[in-house]
Every structure is written in C-alpha cells, then in structure tokens.
Amino acid sequence: MGRRKGGNKALAPSGQKSTPDADGMNLDGGKGQEEAPEVVAIEEKAESSNLEDSPLIGSDKTSADYYFDSYSHFGIARSLSLIHKPFSAHLLASSPKRREMLKDVVRTKTYQNVIYQNSFLFKNKVVLDVGAGTGILSLFCAKAGAKHVYAVECSLMADMAKEIVQTNGYSNVITVLKGKVEEIELPVAHVDVIISEWMGYFLLFENMLNTVLYARDKWLNNNGIVLPDKASLYLTAIEDAEYKEDKIEFWNNVYGFDMSCIKKQAMIEPLVDTVDQNQIVTNCQLLKTMDISKMAPGDVSFMAPFKLVAERNDYIHALVAYFDVSFTKCHKLMGFSTGPRSKATHWKQTVLYLEDVLTICEGEAVVGSLTVEPNERNPRDVDIMLKYSLNGQHCQVSRTQHYKMR
Ligand code: SAH
Image (tube, rainbow, N blue to C red; front, side, top):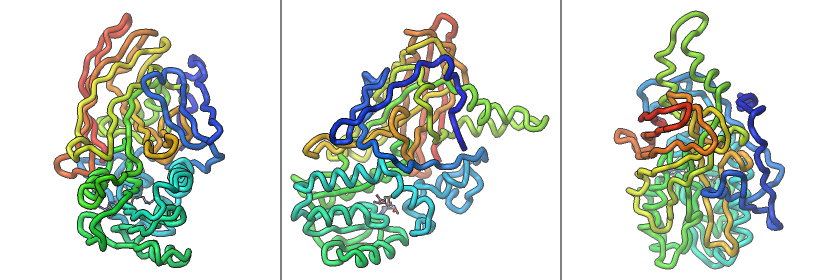
C-alpha cells in the first residue's frame, strides 16, 4: 500500500538527499542526523522492495503461530515474511520473499561490495555462512578466494543451495550443511570468518542474532572476524496524522460500528512501513550499538534513554525506529542504513504509534526510554516498553506504552 503521501508535507521543510561519494557509499549528513549518521552503501537504481500492508489484526499469538495463519496479522506479507525464515518451507526459490530479499539491492549489493572489494579478508580463509538461504553470500565468498565455505541453512532452501552451488561450479569450495547452526556438526574445529545476514525488522525481531553469537563462540578463531560486526538502532519522531487515521482511528467507526477493540490491538503492534523523510519532526537519536564480535547474547535486552528535540513546530503521532549495520573490518568503512533518509530496504522502518498526539514547538524535547527484550514465551518475538514525556508550551504529557513485535 502506498504510504506517507499526505502527512504534513506542506508544513515540512524538504529533507536533504544523500550524495554518494566516489565509492558509491555515503555517510548521510541529513538534517537532524547529528547523533545518528546513517551509513549508506550504494545509491544504485534499485528495485527496492515494497511489502504490502493490510489492516488485519492478530490477537495474542506469537510469530510461530502466524506461520500457519497468514491472514491473522497485519497482512500476508508480514506473516510469510523474513520473520519466519528459520521455519518457513515457503522460502523456496519461487518464494516472493526470497526473491524480494535478493532483489533488495541495498542489502545484497552491500554484502557483495564488502566481499569483492575486501578480498584480503577472504583469500585462503575458512568461512562460515550462518543462515545461507540460496547460498548467495557463500558464492560471493568463494568467488573472492575463500579456501572453503560452510553454508549452513536449516530450511528446505538448503537443497536448492546445494544445487545452485553445483550449477555454478563451486562444489569443491562450498559445502552446504542442512540443519540448524545450533545442531549441525561442522567438519572443521575453527573458522576464520563468519558471515551472516541475520537482521530482522526492528533489527532484533526474530532474534537470529543469537544464532550468530552461538556460532562465533563455538567456531570462530581467536583472531577471526564477524561480518557485519556493528549494528545500531535509532529512534526519531514523525508527524503521521493521515496514516494514523487510516490505520488506527479507522476502527472507531467501521461503517457505523464501533470496532475499537481492534484499535487497541493495532496500537500494540508496531507497524513495519516506510516513512517519508519529510515527516521527521525531531533529531534522530542513537539508542544502542551492538558489537557483534564482542557482545553477549543477553545484550539483545536493553534499556536506552532518549531525547528527541523538535526541529520545527509540528504534531507527533509516532516514534520510528530503524537500524544500520556496518562492516568495520573493511579497508574502508562500509555498511547500510534502513533509515527514512536512506534508500528504502525491505526492512522499511518500524512505527510505534503514540496514544497521544503531541503538539510540540521547535526546541522542545520528548524525553523517555525504550526497553527492548525478547518475549519470554517466544524469544523470537520482541517486547518493547516506551516511556515518554513532553513538558511543552502547548502539551504536557507523560505515558508508558507497551508494544509487541510478533
Ligand atoms: N544468507 C541468505 C539468507 C538470509 S535470510 C541471504 O543473504 O540471502 C536468513 C536465513 O537463515 C534463512 O534462510 C533462514 O532459514 C536461516 N536460518 C535462520 N536461523 C537459522 C539457524 N538457527 N540455523 C540455520 N539456518 C538458520
């Protein structure tokens, strides 16, 4: 569904566009980005993905339940999405989701550039591809000169990966192992490089990061490297009157009937969608940086304070989270951002609607904290607690809201 066409654009100054440097990579110095420079890898003409959103709402289910219940959530697109990567037999070669991931040029091309432009990291090295899917990253590594690549994939896609490896003549370099990283036996005791594309919506949804950390602790050489090795989560605030009306307030009166019980549910579930940069009202605040080479599994739970300062007089309807990842072991820093000022990726952004509409004046700040932790019942789901307050000229509010990504 098209999004963010309306909003308050007329009142909004136009955002700055990223300008790629000679390498096709840029650091986005957009307005309000002082705390949160967005790292962008490429600015090619991308076939960027656009997941469809539908307003169907779920109940008290976890992501595992949704696998078999594709009409229960915000839409088919999400319920058959990357969320279910580890379990999904749908992720075959014909799968639109699998294709969509590969066609996410920002994502795939960044990995390709990282590998091809830094072949010194791979030459004669033993590589482990955690969650190999079609084997695309393993193929990149093999082509860059890796001594051997172990491609571990737990879904049925492993069978396709084997065939793909063979078809492309890399059977002597790439070994596809079908199974869970946590359960397979690797033919070697140690690897030099771990590569993975583990990021979920809101960075942590699906919690595949712990699988990477498991592999790191079990097999990575002392001087081995993890790619990517940094991931950061950011928060900003947006004007979103039109879309909130469409997605949330809609339920108050549906052809004359009160369906506001669904509205409560819709408020709890963060919306994965693209946000127009012109909707951004405040600065962008860095919440948390994770060092994948050092962090402990428990570090995926955290509480981060924030201060979002308004850059103009406006209304705030939602906070928006997004992430970037970087590969700091490259000859030059490389990475990409999923922020609203960067080229869209299939991760889009994550929108947390606020109970209150905040009337904010330039210079005033929404302060608070975001607490993020895996759901106890299903650790692949994420529980988010948002505390915020504004003590402004036209608006004084203080509230706690709970969200569940599932
Ligand atoms: N590397 C591929 C696929 C990334 S999607 C690419 O970049 O295109 C992540 C993949 O990890 C999915 O195919 C999923 O099935 C797999 N996966 C998730 N958890 C896993 C686990 N614990 N063990 C093995 N594979 C896993």
